[in-house]
Every structure is written in C-alpha cells, then in structure tokens.
Image 1 (cartoon, rainbow, N blue to C red):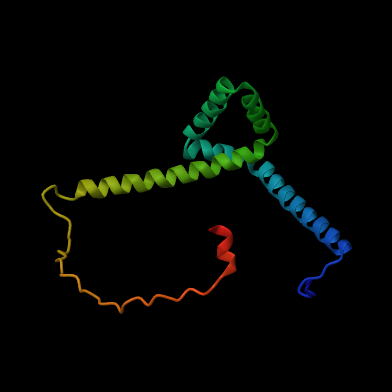
Image 2 (cartoon, rainbow, N blue to C red; image 1 turned 120 degrees about the vertical axis):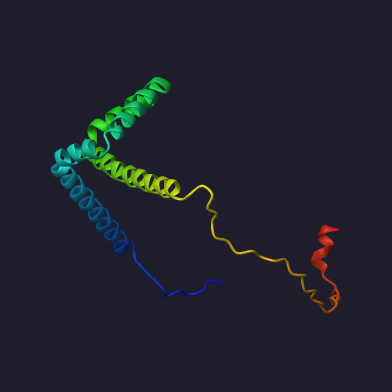
Length: 155
C-alpha cells in the first residue's frame, strides 16, 4: 500500500525554481572568488615567491612531467592553468603557507630534540600486569526452533 507522505511535498515548479536559485547562488560565489583572486593575484604571486619559491618550481615540474608522461592530459593541465591563472595563484599561495607552517613545526621539533641531553630519558610510568579477572557468564539458553516454511526453500 502507498502511504500519504506530507513531509515535503513539492510541485515541479517549486523544484525548478529552487534549482535555478541554487545555480545562481553558486555562480555568484564562484564569480566573487574569481574577481577576488584576479584582483589579489599580483600581490599573492609575489607573496608566494617570498614565502616559499619552491612551490612554483614544484608546480612547473608537475606540469612538465605530466606533459611528458601523458601529453593529452599535460596539455589539458597547462590550458587549465592558463585559463584559471588567478585560482592557481591562490592555490599556490595557500600551499606555500601550509609548507611554511609544516617546515616551521619540523624545525621546532628538531631543535627541541637537540636541546634534550642524550643521556636523559623520557618520563614514563611503569604499568604492572595484573591477573585478569574471570567473569562467569550464565549458560546460553538454546531457543526452540519453530516450524518455518521459509527455511524449506534453502534445504
């Protein structure tokens, strides 16, 4: 039997209007991000060079290696890089910030490791083995099988 569901009843016109509004919202978000990236591209490009120039080198090597291994996808990557240059710069800027942060944390960890004397041990707490407690469970009661004609199909 079919149940009458009154939870979310939409007619096709409402669904189409919602889809159009969603597409417009997505378009304006992407357009705003594109215009911001286009406006900030020169500043971000220089900042990326100052923070970590190897990001550009690694991205260029990625494009070259991709072109050598798979020429069609390499050409596609190069064309997408040229077409979406502001977003690529924004991506590379974010990547340079992340790599700088990671390198800084690694350097701090190495310095902390070097400051610790070699004969100094780390603090630890000795854990003693205890004998396990045995839990006695009640015996399992077997359920009585009822006549089930469904089981006849599989035997």
